[in-house]
Amino acid sequence: VRTSNDNLSGRIPDVMVTAFVIDPEAIWLDPDQVLLVVEIVSKGSERMDRWTKPLEYAAAGVPFFWRVEPDDMVMQYRLGNGPSVHYLATPRDVLLADVVPDLR
Image 1 (cartoon, one colour):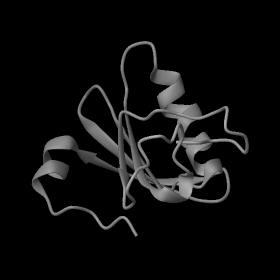
Image 2 (tube, helix red, strand yellow):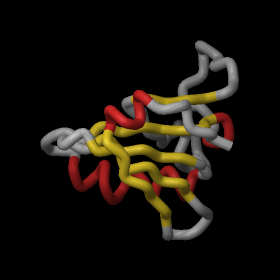
Image 3 (tube, helix red, strand yellow):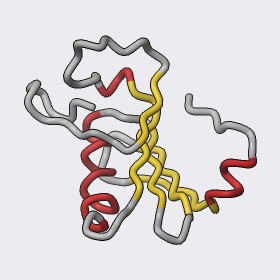
Image 4 (tube, one colour):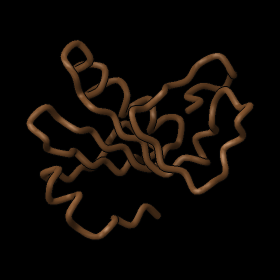
């Protein structure tokens, strides 16, 4: 996902959902083509996954960001245009057993 105005910077999320056909030659996907990014917190990436990435994705215009914590809680963020984000914490098993969330 391209996260800056140049074509040099971006993020490679653990999971990404898009409603577009991805060009196999593309290096970065434009943020307006991305519906959801998911990052899985692992030892050594905690600070980046919890603080830096949600703000970076929000600034780029990605509408939804989910973070899977080591305790299997999924922090669901609806990203906005400012520094604030809103979240819902859902156990991973509940999220996977439920209806697919609306990402519009």
